[in-house]
Length: 229
Image (tube, rainbow, N blue to C red; front, side):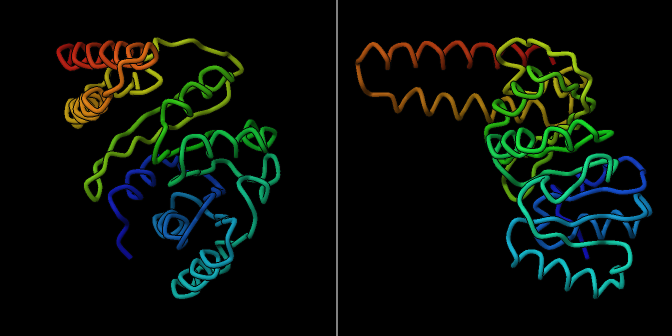
């Protein structure tokens, strides 16, 4: 079983521990990888849909790991009790949904040693929530898989709300500071995306002008970040 670049990058951010929960497990690939590589002793593979759970159960059986990985059917972190696991992975969902999953089970989320979050869109919504709700970003990664960039954020609860410059909700400050090998390419990708949005604003309303000014300022700040790296 070969993990995709995205899943492998997520797996490398998991600390060695007793138990890890994979929320939205799909095929159960990450829990299987973590157990086989001695990163954790046991794992919980959880998903809101029965189809992915059935696939995960089959893959776990094929790997003879049924005594190590437990499958649970349910939404978000509702299948986990506080302090039951050391770490949780919530990957492959939108930033809004990940935020809602955290809010739904804050007692569980705050009890984790750390969590690894991988939004497929709206990372800015998730980062703002993380900072404002008193979570600390421990580590950030970036990967390029199947023609798409993915940001991965490792967090823990420190009960210290923080306020950041607007651009650092959208692009990980840690990725900038450590000069991640892909960061220039990623920033340029964002610039190109915003330039395209700017060009497609054809209305001449006050709201359209405000939006164009916002996008122009964002592009300028992204360009400044590229020159600093």
